[in-house]
Image (cartoon, rainbow, N blue to C red; front, side, top):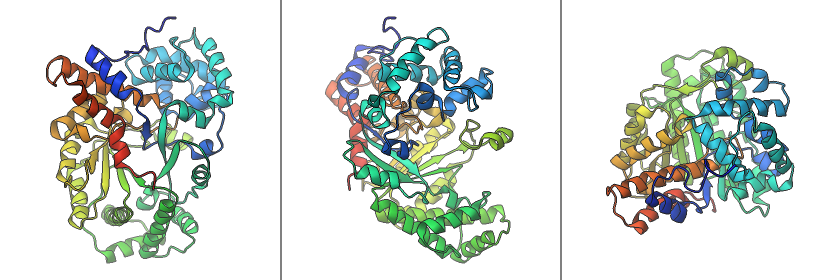
Length: 468
């Protein structure tokens, strides 16, 4: 089959878009500053062996599509063979037209395997055989897949109790891709969650201390932040419904923590006070270490209680929430800024209705001390598709400076997800190229091209400190 769908000018509508992409975007290295890849698999240089293991396992985007088509859970997360699961995914792909999965699927087949056939039930057997032959080879190991993607930096996400043993192994190796981590202490913050006390016990063990009081908790977390910092960490990440920022006193917070440790129930107001206090403490500590903090806001998680109990979290039962964001976020950022303890910050929203809220909020706290200090993060999760990306970039352009934007990330568990950077770059170049064609931007390829290369690579390279 000729290369008619995924071709060199895929998603590029005119000559301006084509030149922007091929000259200024295509060959830029990738800094994937937020993902959920397994550092263990990278450290061990794991070989997956077949397409299901590397491409379908753990990918709740694909799982949701397959369930919608009526495919039995046996072929999704169940005990069907890897090949049978792949065949069911191949059956699903033609039904994903106009879903970003259709684009991503064929970009990934093209970029990693040089396969340009459309995936469907007829082509599935041949594509399974071609990919299995390659994925059984050391050339397609985890490390080599990242090299194939032109990744310069990948930043995984770890809990404070993680030993970082695999990151240590990678830092002591000659692997040319930098593999860093982001500190994600949400389990310590979410005091009302089931299993909270058990988690605090695990944190105490990781920090080699006892945690009997709120002061002990803060000391343990600070110890783990220092441990992460000593092992190359320069980012944190928080996945929250919304920022908690309500008035509290230290005395109140101490009492709330003691109540929870004693197994007592907390009121909503007590929960909010504790979450507000601990988040402020953590962010002040991030500032001290010069980290970048990330906030992913607005997911409504684990909606299907029956399936959550059966399969657990992150298996495809989440959606967009409609939480109020502006007032609490403003209060939170202002509290840090007022004491000059607001570090570099990236804010991602899941509800597109919040685009303009976030785009204007970041301008309130960009104080001139750092270029793009507070960032409006790229389209995330349900919004990391063409329409979502364009809306995010339009809001940022209209209300801020897209020229300072640090660009795309995968936020993925898949080692084949890196063509999402290409997808983003093509969307960006086409957006700008269309405006050049219409005369809304000057016909100055160097001027616009510099902005493209900055967004694709240089801004992120300047913003993060992965070398120190």
